[in-house]
Image: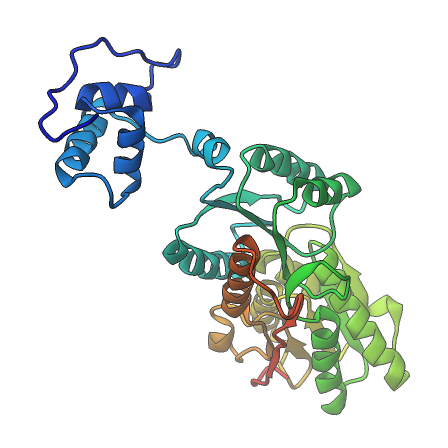
Length: 348
């Protein structure tokens, strides 16, 4: 039986083959049992404060770091949530990730972040690695993934919530918005401003970008002025530099264009800078709109008309939904559509 007065053990330490200190090493150094050491490090209230201090000192001196995988195996529970996003260079996903962390941390969960780079093989590799550690939950971006990835998620039994999109599939959880409806709304805005030769300029060409393309096409078909020749679809990663290049090439090929819908704001910001450099009047000669309302869009010359997407709220609501699933609590709605906002500025 452990007691506050138990002397530190002089038994030799038995390290892992890796040389890392084990929980048993900490227990021996503190003169307590492994169970008491574990409870002390977890902050269990039943452990005498004097023993807690001994264990903490021993752990610090030995450089002991708890093994979350071993703890998950022992308790059948993990304190980690895996989050898979396409890119870290996109401010959109950074805002979402920060909201997720702000929501999960107070509940005692830490995030394991993985970047897929829009590659199915990379997502599969990350899922194999993270699911092997038995995470408590999983947040993934969108619904477009390989069948192998889908099966891994389904068979894992790990609660999963999808980000940025909505779906009506029973038993599938998601928090996002209709990319198609948002794109249709901003295209209709251009039509209402009298524009008829409206181009769609896109990069990356991931699922959400192509959903926006469908919204653009639907609005123009309804107006009787859809022209597939006005679509510029480039698979390159999006950037301001690419936006400028694509606008220049579009105007050289189709000087009759009177509006450009860029699939996201970094392309649109680059397009506005190119128009300024080329002395193409915006919105007099052409109207320019973007998507997502990223930082700096309101400071462009002229300020950019765009669709504001609720990235932080999506992260917060998705993490909240996942917390309920991990706790076994009921979730009233498996899909939450947080909508979007058309932000009209001077570029249109």
